[in-house]
Image 1: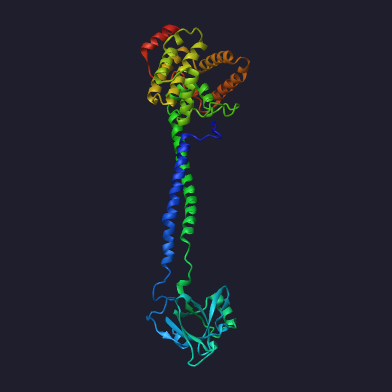
Image 2: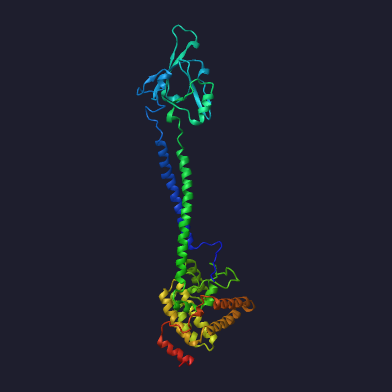
Length: 430
């Protein structure tokens, strides 16, 4: 049974690095949106607009013929309309057709046209009749911008036919062209596309960082997950402690006091940065072990020195030997030992355990007996809850399908013959 550990309010070192990567990806996407995508789209849209000299809506430049009658305008070719107009402003007031405003042009023959006009490109010649004294008789010869006759947009066709202020219903005079097209706001496009690409970067970055986090998490889990029977057997010698240690959060506190099962890890934890920091912290605080040399000296004392040889009970021997393999596992998670070093040294201790104890049950019970004595010494009457939990952990270990206790007790681990002879002498083994 595996238990997912959630460290509320805490981000691992890897997650912090990935978060920085996510921000970098978002920043890159945002910059691409603002500096690449938006300008490219702006240029594409602006490139479709023709405002060059000689285009529809530009000032007459002699490149197209000048016309003065409707018949000359209806040929479908560009033209420049030259029209004589008088000072009656009501004759040139346009109106809306649908949602578009059209100017009104009254030709000399009385035809009234709807038109779109770029006024900046028209020229006017004011004419006063010879001898006239009143301004009413002033008239103007207007040369309009280059234009072309266009059919009505479909949505305006019926409205144009119904419009009473024009007499020509077949289309309108376009003398504005692309000059009337409002180009997009480049700065607004940059802002909009920066936000869009930021959002895309967030999605892409989250997908990538999630994948990396899962991959790294699995890799770290595999690094401390037993891959062979030898590794699982060694873990079995301190599995009770490992299950408890694996349930601690990054501050060293139990994530759930009622949980008795967690994944089976060498050293009790995944081989990640948080576990490394916590393990080193526990080694320093609880054991006074600050270096690799300190750890190996302690293991030698407990398994080879008087820490083991002075023991007179099985519980005492279990306490020294099981904690020796435990320390070697912690050294691996702390980064002080390679996996090979940890396995070789743990196998030596394992050989001793195999000859001192008759099987998994004797080892486990002896260890729990020693743990109970130790817990009462350090916690007094408050020790009961911890002792009960360790018993529950042991029961779970005995029953789970991946229990190391399903392995043969005398599984070959490698042999240290010189030390084994001393163990035989100590235990009376023949």
